[in-house]
Length: 238
Image (tube, rainbow, N blue to C red; front, side, top):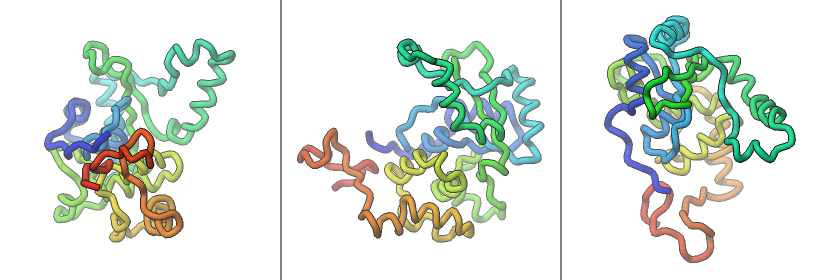
């Protein structure tokens, strides 16, 4: 798949949540954020971040709007579970990998009534867990976020910094950003968080490239077959 152009307006899920939470500032996170930047990814759940001081108010606003407080639904499709001898064990093993996340967020089912929201959930995170908000000085905000009223879409460096704080749990998201978006070795050069800088360099940046060479972004069903696409994952000519 190819990357898409960056969006120029908020997605419908973020828009609805922003109206519910208004005037609280919110950051679309995870798949919502990557979709905005152009990564071809399916949004299976709406993840949003609010300031720690706004977290209790955000929970109240969502509940008042009909969102139902619940637990994450990670049940695999019926066709997968049907032939498994112990479906409950499968679900417990899946959820075990998300214990830290589940302890740190509030999860809601969408209210009934909108077909596009059927079976979707909202994950609400405090910023102390997701690290999406940066100190605001007004001048640098335009380089950190795409802002639409109270929606703050994190741009590549900001989203990358947020994901780095999670290490293994968000490695797949980081790999997709590095593959599809213009996220290069210098993306975190100005980041004061040296732990995030070192993690990125070791797993995706300069240290990794020195050991294994540049990331292969060619598109083909079988690399080396001579049938690679004339453009790479980012849409750049090869």
